[in-house]
Image 1 (cartoon, helix red, strand yellow):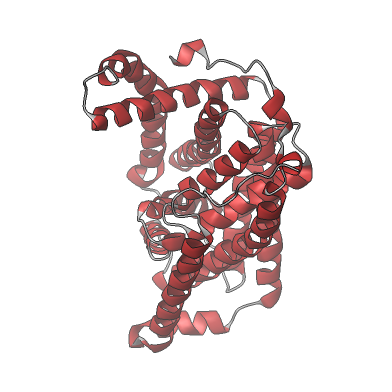
Image 2 (cartoon, rainbow, N blue to C red):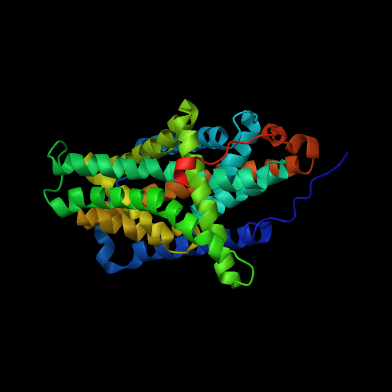
Length: 358
């Protein structure tokens, strides 16, 4: 039987490098643990951690599993609705596991999923468009949440900070970012890509043209997918966010009073920007972003630190454990061409990106 090679993993996703990332994360966790245990000024944090409720933490871990499964549902709907659930689970969960280990995790996780789908015979053009579209759709749920919660805070519908800057400000920025991506990027691509990709131009401009063109195509693909009204895609993307927010909420409940829901939601969404710092698992960057955002919205520093530490332990541990097992079984399947074949690889015609986006 023909076999599919599995040793040409994307950069950073080889077994050797993943093992190194695991060691780096372990070292970072040891450093964080040592700081919490030994730094004199963190006595309130140590006291808070000692009062943990195991039942709340177990519940948080269970809900994180639901968040991971919702991601798999959205992943399958976006890339190939006819793919078996078992293959969808292994690819989607492997992507989440990689995302929890790699710097700029979401990008690395999607790269692993794209590699597996390519091995399954899916056309490279389709993978590129759907990868951008899937990233945009899952990100759109975060943006929508910022807009809704920010406006609700500004209008007094939800209790929380009374500062217009901290309530309406994030909503305004989210609207501006949405318009920038959906309107400006396609227009920029239409005007600049032909010139940048012309023969004789620099390699840097050529790469920029390909990236811009792929992004514009992905925006069009996202529009097509959203217009289809696929409940699995929308439900999975929303569930992925909502379940993770419940985990965040439960991790504070494990240690005492829970900050207002609106405060938690906005701090969660803004704090995730710390993932842009290129460290394995976002350790340090996301943690500092979440704690900083919570303190900015009025949560005591010790309370914020305790809740974030618990949340990050669940967020890194559950996807890494499930994703690691899924990745091992996925690699075995990809050695067999028949088993690796993705049903959508046989599609002859594929949807063109939405005209409006280009």
